[in-house]
Length: 128
Image: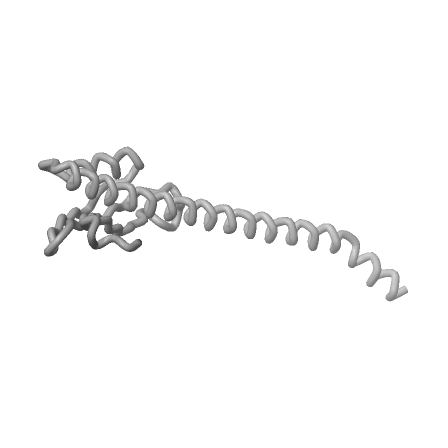
């Protein structure tokens, strides 16, 4: 008689375990989706910084009056905000360094930031 009570008390336990397992699985998948989205946004921010620095370097090569303005425009077109821009003229060539940040819709993270540098060297100093 005691065995029957024990068997009857286990009824539905597998259902509860399955529901709990499904809940853990859903939470895990949501976490993976959030991390994936954050990684993609971080990469877009790095790309925006690279493109902004390259645009500034091209503007320097074209003897533009405002290479930082050009890099800020490119950053904006890539959904980023330019935080700083510095144009340096070493002995030969030029170097543009920019810092950008972009807003994210990923819950735990508000902003991603990235830095990039691009420069010009005279043809005589290039490799190859």
